[in-house]
Structure formats: structure tokens, C-alpha cells
Image (cartoon, rainbow, N blue to C red; front, side, top):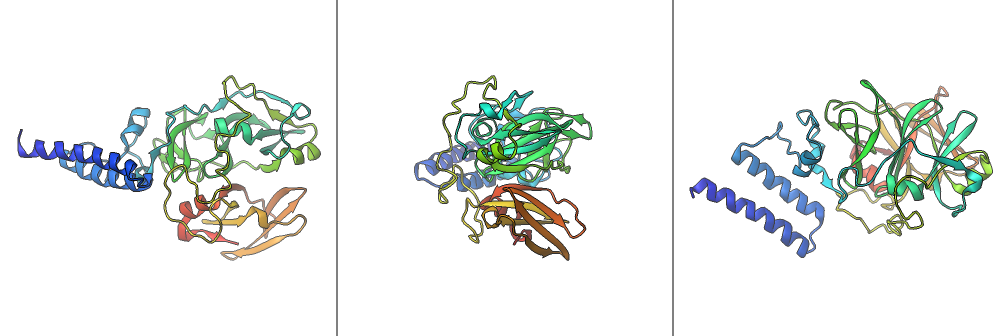
Length: 345
């Protein structure tokens, strides 16, 4: 065995030892991934393997998405880790069934995503969304992807119409800083759920369009919209919708299922924020700070913004009266994703 082969062999063994000892010594997964990425870069350069403009694409991602064009990729890909379940191991729903809200017999405290649909409303309760994370549906004639990542509390609804036509979205099995990575089934481009940005593939550089929605409790929805339709538990999959697999996670500010980068302690890690943009500036404000019937105003980059909460529903308008789209996300996730460019009010 020549010197180069011996060096490569020991480097490979070293990577295995780093991973093994990292887990046994309770080193965070984030630290292990960082070490492995650094060593993988050195290894790729040593053997001259596929190394895209300095970006190392994790092997599990290549295996799961052999048809994805990784020649067009964001450096963010190097932060991607496996969340455990494989591609589609968390099954997104397509052509979902609905039932009358009068038949809903679970806790009225359950939160749900609500979208106006012609003369009624469609409701997507968290106790189902937690198990599926994406629901591909049509609301008011528009194909939408209703998305929820329980690890970072991000609720966002996107338009499924892309430049190459309508598509459906699935759960990739990958995470970035505890945030879900989605993929479109037309091109298998990868998309970050909280930002709506394509990370790799044919749509690299594109962003998904937001669809307006509300986040309300089932009790509030019953009172406001007694004719609404609720996502049925008859999903075609065997899941225990009585059980929350992340029980307690959303309230324990020190608990993370996966290692995350350092973030600002301006708010508690799991504080739910209302997130929107003014021009290119990401803005967040605590959902709990919005008082019923009382406006909250701010001036961002010279633009006056008004947030109003009435009957539990939120509206955000700019100074011309234009509607500003928004979504919801835990503080730690917003702080990591947007760093110093993000603004809080």
C-alpha cells in the first residue's frame, strides 16, 4: 500500500472515530457535523472527487436525490443534516379529505392553520400537521402547500405554481438548523421551508410565493367560522393522532432535538414570532405581544407598518394600505436564519 493510499485509509478511519467518540462523549451533533464537513472537504480535495465550487453535498442527500442538479447549490447545503426519517419517511399529504368542524371532537386548544376558501374556510390542525408537515391542497382555486415544521414552529403556506408548472411538495428528510427541507416533485429541487428559497436544483435562486393565512385555536375557529372544513384524520396513513411526538419540546427553551448554531437571547428560544418582510428586511415581533384591538406600529426602512389583531386574527398593512404577508416561527429559528440583517419590533 503506497503512502497516499495509507493516508486516505487512516483519514477514513479517523472520520468514523470522530463520529463515534462524538456521540459517546455527548458532543453536540452540530459540532460533529462541523468536524465531518471540514474533514470531508479535505478528503474530497485529496482524492479529487466531485467537489462543487467548494460546496460539499452530504452523501445521504445525493443518495436520496440522484436526479437533483447539485451543480446549482447554495453553500447552505453544507449545514444540512439528516433528520432521521428518510425521504418521504414523513409523508406529505396529497388530495386531503375534510370534514365539518362540527365533527371535530378533540381539544379546542389545538392550534390550526386557517385559509379562506370561497365562502368557507379550510382548517389544518397541528395535531395532524405534526405527523405530515406538508399538505398539498387547492384553496380558492389556487394550488397550495400548507407547511409546518414542529422543530422550529414555522407555519407557512406557499403557492405550488412554479415556472415549469404546478407541482406538489414532499418532505426530504433533511434539516437545516432544525428547519425542514422540502422538495418539489417536478424537478426535485430542494427548498428551505422557513425561507421559501430553493437551495439546490433547477430552481436554485427562486423563492416561493406566500399565501395569506391565520393561526388560531380550534375553539376560536369554531366560534368565528362554524361552517369551516377541517382536515380529516382519514389520511391514508396509520398515525397516532392522539399523541404528540414532540410533546414538551415547544415549551422547553433548552431542548433541541438537533444541534443548532448560537442565536441571540433577545427572546426565549421557543417564543413564537410573527415574521414578515419590508423590502429586503426580515422583521419579527412576538405573537404574544399583539393585543386584541390594539394597533402595533413601526417604521422600517422608511416604511410605516401597522399590525392589528381582531378576534384573534392578524393583519399587517403598509402605509399605503397594502397587505403584507406573514408567517410564524420560533425565535431561535428566525435569529439563526436572518442573523444581523433581521429586525425586531
